[in-house]
Image 1 (cartoon, rainbow, N blue to C red):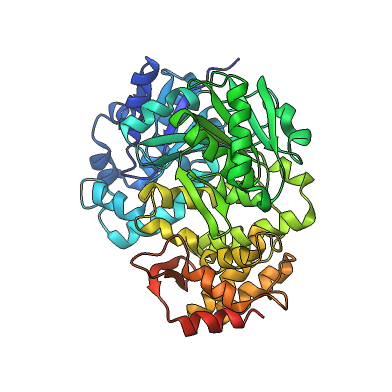
Image 2: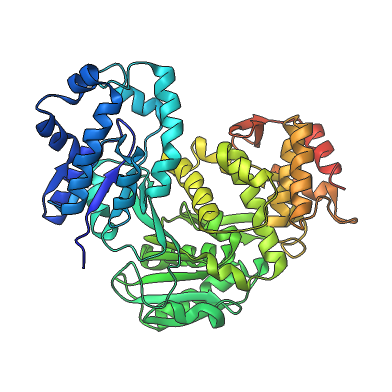
Amino acid sequence: MEASALVFIGFMGAGKTTGARAAAAALGVRAVDTDRELEQRLGTSIEEYFASHGERAFREVEEDVVAEVLETVPAPVISLGGGSITSARVRDLLTRHTVVMLDVDEPTAWRRAGGKKRPLARDRERFAALHAERAPQYEALADAVLLDGSAETIRRAAGALRRIPGGVKVIWAVAGEHTYPVYVGDVLDGAFWPLRGRRFLLSDESVAPLYGDRVPDALGPFVMPAGEEAKTLANAEVLLRAVAAAGMDHDDHVAALGGGVVGDVAGFCAAVYQRGVGVVQVPTTLVAQVDSAYGGKTGVDLPEGKNYVGAYHQPRAVLADPRTLSTLPREELAAGWAEVIKTALIAGGPLWARVRRGAQDVDRDLVLACARTKLAVVARDERDAGRRQVLNLGHTVGHAIETATGYARYRHGEAVGLGLLAALRLSGQDGLRAEVAELLETHGLPTRVDAGIDEDAIIAAAQRDKKRRGGRVGFVVVEAPGDVRTGVPMDEGDVRAAVRELR
């Protein structure tokens, strides 16, 4: 079998050399940096050779050196120069290895690398254009993306990065002091599991018979009824008492197999059982795979409001296998598209471009893009202190519709879709609202609430939204795809008009 290395790639300033050294130290092996190897071959610095011979001559020598390193694998951990992946020969050789992308946004990259000796980091406009051009190349090559390239995160991740199943990509999530892997792809195979120790399978009556045997060596399953109406303290107590009777202890962990309801309830049980045990989220619906499985929000509903009882409890890992979506009822799959559209509005860029075309297909890349968008937001704000509130886009009115209808009339995604239309009306985005309404209809989602639903009950529920501060609810509004603002106060009359338009 050919030798395989852990290869770090990324843009200038991403921290590839430091990251490779941290991974090598964690694994007890040696690291090789191809830029250092290149300078030894050149007999001078990269900057001086680049200046005297030009970029084309430099790339030719770089390709030879990098290809030699990737072919001979002189060390188990390798870091590449940022531009080396522009070579087709290098890209082909990378398929033999586990490729790790260290993500870095353009402002951070410029702060670290701009204006220094690097020949391609002297002009900010050119630098930004190069960052935008190369980002998709790095992402396409990467088996794993690390949203935080700190040495501590890489040390934690190193072992798991050496054990990525085939057909799977990984995002290494960061939330406060917590880090965890998100596996997306053909990962639910009945053999792979990311954690050691006993796992207690919590699921619902619909999903457990379909995929319960895909969680290897699990105890259970311990099941709850399916559907949003089952997201209650009473059902959480049933599950808690069941795992307690089965002897679950603090060194064990929960496997939460199902959609958003199971993820929320099972995650809540893990958060409160013996003051907290680990949980691995295994989302099987589109809503859960693109949104609710990530970020650590858990909880149950009360008659007074959705998710009124809950806790932040970050997962130890997430396993999202899009193949499970093939058994979803058509209406459930459609409901997930509301969260996809919401996420695309927050992200803008390529994700919004893909979603606005109205494509119906769901694949690994779509799930990855949505998960990465949410995880990038959570990395900056774990507990809704600021930026994370963008993820509430469409949810204030959406949750209010769910509450006003007793969680029985609309699926969560259906209500969120209606909430998006209200949010876009409050944003003053007539054209974008019309476009989103057309997208919702394309995916079989409602754009109007049923006759007979009490408008006053929706308004009252919105005013009780759990994110209110100082007695007021701040709304999330859209300036443009990719430009979303939080905490915007709204007059009750404007909110009422936006809700009434849904009738």
